[in-house]
Image (cartoon, rainbow, N blue to C red):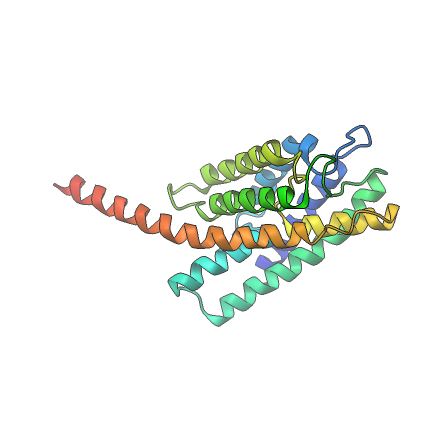
Length: 235
């Protein structure tokens, strides 16, 4: 189990570091909008690097979605629930030193807050919807094809598309561990941008839970279609 926990710690640390150092002062917009390539590429890279030993979540919202799906299907025991709760704690903790290291490497650390023209409701809904989509993609990895590589690339594309779609509305966080860590580091550096950090914690987690429910529905239909196709193939 410790290897899986270590994989979550390393993956979350590296993704947070990659996201944070990709931000510069010339990007006068909070969030990841100008770092979409770095975010998407880092997600794919570190999922492959850890070999999916832990499921390669690196995001508490994805872990919540996984727990919701398996609790609905009743295919999870107490030990596995406890392990995934440890994943969430490790993800939240390991992101913080990564954000501080990024501050040491880049004097203009990333932070998440509302762009000038956005409201809190706009940002919350944007984070909720696209966190649901991203977690939904993550939960489908390995379900449609035997190769998880296809799903990994799809997840990278989901992050990329989400950032470009709503990055100028919410900042494009979709990951509570990253959102909390970079705002803590930025608050240490400049004493600002902690007021709406709750938004980047609550909305992605809620989106992850919704994605877990939707994934149950879609998986049942997918299984039915595969069963139907196999019956016709035998005929």
